[in-house]
Image 1 (cartoon, one colour):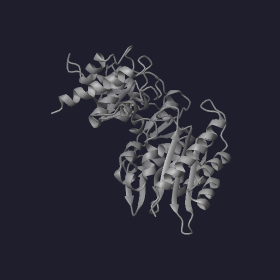
Image 2: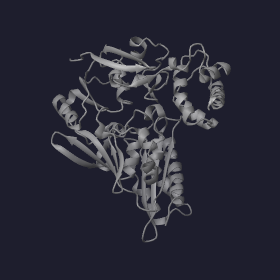
Image 3: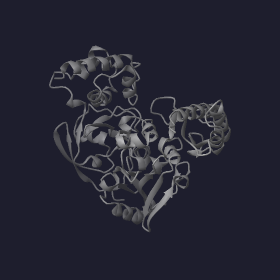
Image 4: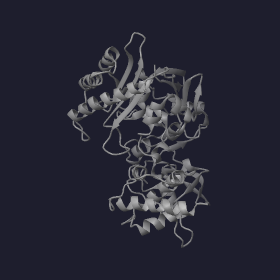
Length: 288
Length: 162
């Protein structure tokens, strides 16, 4: 058998899962969709004494809109989010981004919360949640707390979650009326993690410029906002060569490293090109 | 370390299987070694190659990326569910006619990926076919004949539909 032995717990309530994680401390790992954790187990790169399987916790599986806010249970399957008409209507950038995650066979099991808590530095969901100002809800022995996206994704494969805390839900605020959006990704093969992915959200600002949000991932420790590119779009709009200038600013702001998948210079060029194209596409989609 | 065995009840291709297994037993190994259905192949065993794809409640999943205990109470379909006795399923017949396989190792996973794909999209474009196949690695064919087989299977299934 490939995975190392572990004790298996399969709670049906969030409180029981939290209690199990608290009781076993660092020896326990929560099991979400398993599309990253099970390979790590099969390689025996992780050897938890206890696996706390979250797949039978019905209260974590929802994808619902409440008062304009999208609420996603941490165990909602990526495929469920991809197929949800309410998400496609209100948060189409999320629908688009989920479609870039691996393959349907993976998205049928993979969960939104699992991907966010795993925080692979080239994963799509952390980037789009950062772009959308999502708020994560974590529950631990001491109770529940909310963590804003910029505080949640702390480093490569690291989040603000404590070892005994469970990510239970994600709240995504409504996109302001008229927001144009774009999600652009470059990967060597369909379904691979991104070499670079870019999220751009644009809407007209009251003073004449734009409100701009630019998030880039794949260039280091996870998704980053790029204020230099946002400032150019805010001041100059998307006309003329402003989108190219935003792309150039983004390429200068990121700090990619050489790795076996791509050299740093290539990632910089991807950042420039994808940011420019995403800015143009988002600008085209804006409605006054 | 407590890795106590657990009883798992799973329906595979309409037949109920009840076995006592270690929690770490992968669903792919359960299907092959406990249910005795060796049509499901294991290639990479870390979710990349797609050879072990089966249908879990009708949806394609990698059976090497879940544990058998997680499938408790679930209904699973494997490649053995396709043929009706000696009569091949249209997907299998199309792959045979178009030489959509050489060594055949990847074929069960490809067929189980395609069954729900063609049910949802009976007339796919070539781009959609290639996208649907992107999660299944074939190292023999170069995919050309596989794409042709999918086109033929889609036509056969459309002709068969009421």
